[in-house]
Length: 259
Image 1 (cartoon, rainbow, N blue to C red):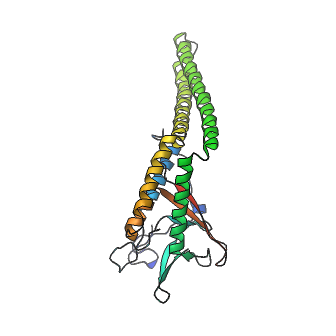
Image 2 (cartoon, one colour):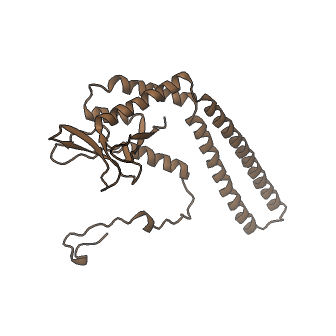
Image 3 (cartoon, rainbow, N blue to C red):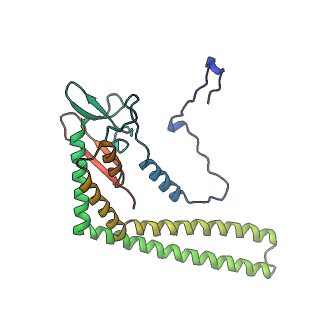
């Protein structure tokens, strides 16, 4: 923050550092939530962000894909540009000379086709082998983590025994107990993350996603751009956009909302 009067500024202003200039320091306090839980919250907040609108149009959302499509090259959110001469709208990357754009109606059709394919995949059980394999690996990790938790608890109990037998002084006990407590807390957080991942790829979550996709497909046509945007954000977290040139085909890599 540059204060009022500094550098000749009459009002003051803010400077945003580039990511490579940001210094991240690990906190020394005991965290209240795990890094994984925090990042999950951040992703949800970003997926529900209010789409930007141009001034002068009374805050009306005209871009049904606002806040959803992200340029895979530079990471910026792509925006809609309307041409009065051509009478069409184009989805464009805001970074100069970056990714080639596409007609927004074609982008909508492509996204809806991806939703239909995802719905078909869930309903027909395609990819169940991969799902079962992933679940089996996660279950192994859960069992190993649970054993680790039991081992740490035994070490803690032994620590108390050694204190009672006066093998350890109170100072040594406190020091070693703090280390074990931190390890136990971290391992429990790992277990919670693994259990969340198992829940993420379970059939219950897939079924909820399928129901939401069905709702989007049933109500999308005929809805206003603002309503279309709201519908898409109930199932799509983000859609990475790829296109090498104006003459080449475009593609989306869609990340679905974690139900």
